[in-house]
Image 1 (cartoon, rainbow, N blue to C red):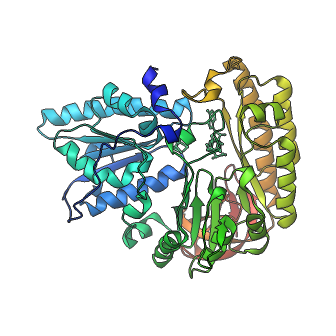
Image 2 (cartoon, rainbow, N blue to C red):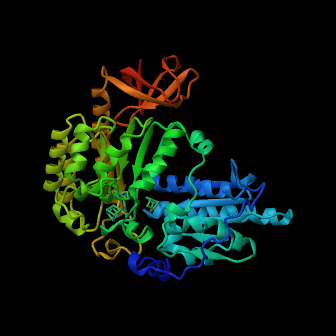
Image 3 (spheres, rainbow, N blue to C red):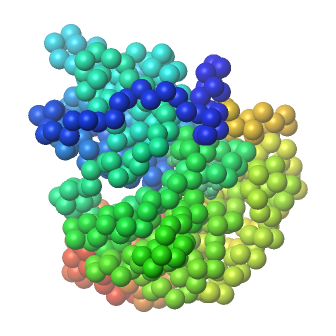
Length: 476
Ligand code: SAH
Ligand code: SF4
Ligand code: F3S
């Protein structure tokens, strides 16, 4: 990796590059009639949401969706920078697109390639230099300028837009049209908060997404109402630190995520609410109370802890100890004993000893997770963790990951098994793999398979869990 990776990974506040894309002056009709776009999304749910919003903006500009890169005029790769493996995928994709573009040119046509997302933000100019196939590189805070950037690229310009502009990109992006919402189904994502001010020493997010920003209540309510009107019944609020969301409520008071959830539950048609991802430091009383009192709020909480060792938590700059986390879990469970917890774990952070790792196993053993995500530490350029000396050997990371996986998989199975015999409300979301089946999600997020005779997509049906499968539950 070259120096410019580091240069692009300065803290968000300092990472303001010149605005390469002028604001969109001309809002006149479609400019790309008949063109087709293929969007490939990597990374977290926020990238999924962003891809949807960019797709909506491109549709307004006259693009139609393509099913593959081969049938597209524009390929957009929405990237993730969280671990090295995720970031590497971009360059292999670009190699493939380079060959496709050459073949097109020989045949007298063209292919435009845009790279968006967190790799675009972190490695903007480097991508443009290393991969001549790329026409547009655009960071997550600049998506509202995508149509303008593409118009300029069509004139032969290479556009790199990775500044953190002050304008509200969400307000500037067009709202999803009802047919697009319907195509996406009865559940939807809604980003309410973006960016992160926590600066955990392993993580690129504060650099790629910038400082914490909360969207205003009125904007969120309007978007949720549009979703409801188009048939959405479950909304998952998104944010890199979603529980850091705050805003001024209709009553003039300062609201936290708990109050926002109450407000959204009043929208007719919205029967279920979820949110992700939360930081333990931002779980306030209002949010915990919502888990006790708000029926529409599903009893599932993704609350990453990363490690169970205070020494490592400190080195990670997590701003909480293992005991803080356990106390918090206790408070949440006393508010709602039915709540299922999920977590993220990193093994092999620099300096992690066997004793540190065992403290993580100990914490997991105490909490009992219904679901979990676990990763080998991946040193990310520009983050403080990557500079630490005592990096853990790959073989040790692999061995610890296996042990973690064994424990967490056992807990996940135990949780699923504990649901057998329970009567639950199930939101039917889509057809199952076998004909005559429908799939929905349990309140605790497991896929549940039922016979299609029980209802239609969009119905909430009361079913009894009969048995568990390898990755799902069955109900009747
Ligand atoms: N905002 C969320 C998580 C965002 S990233 C939070 O604070 O919990 C999602 C997960 O990726 C993290 O929880 C962490 O477990 C993992 N992760 C982030 N950076 C990583 C790295 N450098 N190596 C391995 N895993 C990492
Ligand atoms: Fe990354 Fe989450 Fe830490 Fe923010 S709180 S730096 S997003 S792990
Ligand atoms: Fe990846 Fe960026 Fe999400 S790094 S996890 S796409 S915020």
